View 1 (cartoon, rainbow, N blue to C red):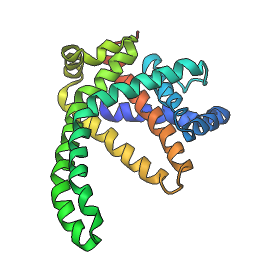
View 2 (view 1 turned 180 degrees about the vertical axis):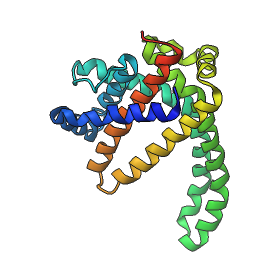
View 3 (view 1 turned 45 degrees about the vertical axis):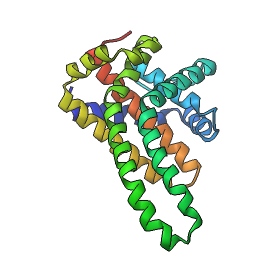
Length: 216
């Protein structure tokens, strides 16, 4: 499937959220509540697993919560090293915060920037496998697939590494743009942005898995 077709079908799917306003409002409300919003991640996982033709009705909240928690844990596993590197940079500049801003800011930025840059580059590199690993985990219902590096790499090769990398970059940019738009309205805007971003990403990844892995 061409990238444009994948994105168009994911966008069309996401637009169908408006066909059930009650379900959409409930998703947004869930997205507003910390911890409870794991259900929203679980809803994305349901879309990845089932690859439905339209956004499913919210149901079985306990399973959605557990699925969302597992997806979050899987992504944290892949992000641990980059986060640790960026955390070291932050820890190094913390003592300088006691000084006036004009004194600590230049030196802090000088120290922090390399750690942030390396951390972000590694985060993207790790997520090349991580995103497919989570999709494989969700589609199979087997958490150990998060660590099936060879299998996940083979799935990426079936997509085509170049096409997959372009898709990842596009997803990253979409999340940034939607997040920036959502931040215009604090809190509520973020919840709305999360709903549309997760649904779009879930369907887009589901379409990729349909091609390279098939239905469960």
